Image (cartoon, rainbow, N blue to C red):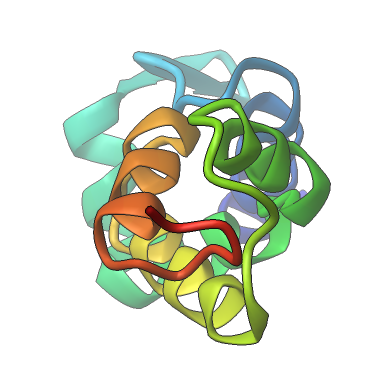
Length: 106
C-alpha cells in the first residue's frame, strides 16, 4: 500500500460523492487530519485530486440554476480552474453567471 495513491483515490471518491474533502483520512491504522494529509500530498497533489473529481454536468446544473441559460464554451475552463483552486459548485455557478459566461444574460 502507498499513502499517496490510497489517499488520492479516497479523496477523489469522497469529492465525487460529497463535493468536499473529508476532515480525516485513515491509512494503515493512522488517522491523518486534513492539514496532515494535505501537507503530505502537497498543493499539486490536492489540485490533481480536485481535477480528477470534477463533474462538469453537476457544475452545469449549478450554473443553470441561476436562470441565465446554459454555459458558453469558455465557462468550462473557468469552472475547472475555480474547482481546482478549491471553490464549490455553488460558488462556481454564481461566478460563471457573474462573469457573463452564459448564453441568456440580461
